[in-house]
Image (cartoon, rainbow, N blue to C red; front, side, top):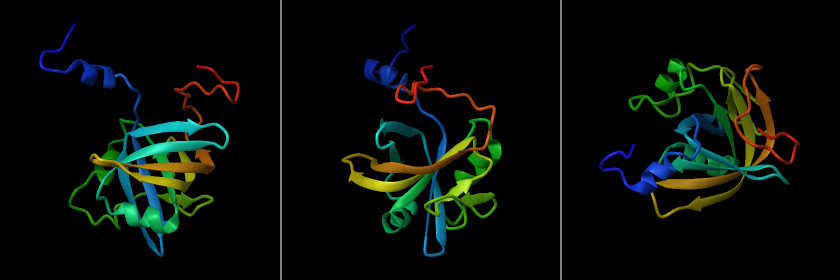
Length: 162
């Protein structure tokens, strides 16, 4: 069934997989997070991810200065994380205060109630001519917090195909 008023390209784009992630970073005693949904593996060797983040968010200088970020994937039904991380009225430096985090290799905050996290060293930052900017991260660490989480992608290099 074709939806009226929706361009065909928009319908096709809606089929591209996305998820719900908190992109976090810390530098010089400050830390912050931003919600992102466009994350994609972009290299097997070395393992890297590409992340699209909204422009103008307070996390950008922390990523720039620390050269690192973490991606914390969480369930769409986690109302606490969604509500806490999307509050417009909170100080961006305090958004992570009510959330339990730990640090892995880079020192970026890793949300422990997340399904899984990837700890990344920033390799590239690309300022796009659009409302998002692109970060390329080298995966230097990670952790699965939910042992029942199931992979949703095809990872051929490691022998797993879903």
